Length: 157
Ligand code: GUN
Image (cartoon, rainbow, N blue to C red):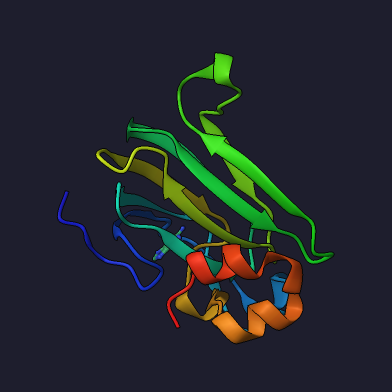
């Protein structure tokens, strides 16, 4: 798949970027410049890897393609923690597709450390690293002291 390292952990490749753009003045002010309509990536985490806490300016849709299920840890702006499982076993309350709301801090880890999770991540307007913020451990702990252990487990100093 020609994946390369992602700063949040794991590996990715962008597989789609719309060839049309939205101008800055037609987007919410938080974007600050134009964006492609939409982008999509393949994203792979090995069983011993995790996606560290980060947040985006846009909703992001995750799709399960292959490997084991993956648990997503979401902390919304009000500090509520929610766990969701992306996977194919609908009887175990897994979902093929999960949307991560804009502005939520989220992290993820494959459920079987001897497997991997291959997923797709689609975002609109299209992804720019300017819209991506990697969480800093001490800042997240001071925002959400209740989740100190989770934050330590899912950040790199
Ligand atoms: N392109 C580079 N990184 C990402 C990401 O985390 N999500 C999406 N949707 N696109 C990306």
